[in-house]
Amino acid sequence: MNTGLLLDPAYQEHDPGPGHPENPGRYAAVMNALEASGLLSKLKGIPSRLAEKPELQLCHPARYIDLVRREVEEDGLETLSTGDTDVCGKSHEIALRAVGGVLNAVDEVMSGRLTRAFCAVRPPGHHASAEKGMGFCLFNNIALGARHAQRKHGASKVAVVDWDVHHGNGTQDLFYEDGSVFFASTHQSPWYPFTGHAEETGKGKGAGATLNLPMAAGAGIQEFSKVFEERLLPALDAFKPDLILISAGFDSRIHDPLGRFRLTDGDFALLTRHLRGLADMHCGGRLVSVLEGGYNLDGLGSAVSAHVGALL
Ligand SMILES: [Zn+2]
View 1 (cartoon, helix red, strand yellow):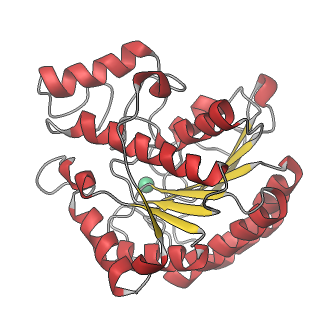
View 2 (cartoon, rainbow, N blue to C red; view 1 turned 90 degrees about the horizontal axis):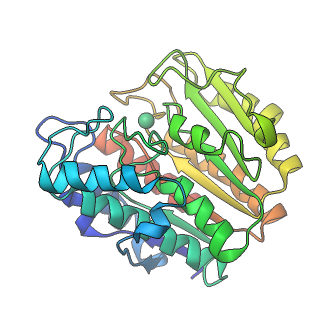
């Protein structure tokens, strides 16, 4: 087995409340679809764990980490004060468990015990910047995974590809002036969070290491293939990453309630094969994919199955 799967039923315990699109049912939808498709038995399980504070501090300052814990566990807030992220009493703990699970997956892949991994985490992370949880996100799972690969495993260059229908503003902010982490994003524009313009390309040491590929509502595989082949893949090829991470949002799938893109399950498999090919070329195959959005439960399950099938 060379492909891993991070799953933990505890990820259902983060409950933003009745009627919320980012609800615990998403976890069951993913798990049931992977089981029904026969993929579950072909994947090596990766355990979750709670992330430690110094690990969170790779991207978030202590005062923000403390604020999240206090607001969730002591003040009992229903929404994080920094932005539109609804929480319950368990949300801080489960967010730590999402980060820790992603770090475990990075450990497995960077140590060579696994080649690729998919992390079925909740809550998502790509809208969280250093000091601002928003857009259903508390801590930036994938950004922390990138930094962990660098600090613990000596990866010098990491690429993050974000195909969620929403721009990964938090990830972009965290690495905007960095240069050692390349951030590439396809997203609907104009759309929440209204960042990710093509002119945003990085700054200082990070100049040129941010690639935004905004697309109009209605975009499907024709538009995606064009920007992947003409812009995204050549940019990553030139960057030569040591590890590729995917912010795998499936709200860019057709029929998602929070997006207007038209990607099908087969299209996600195609995009996955593109990135897998690039990982084979530059990183010894090393690729870790982390769940972000995806709010049509049936569609989420089938798209994740297609994605994971292409990782295998
Ligand atoms: Zn999204």
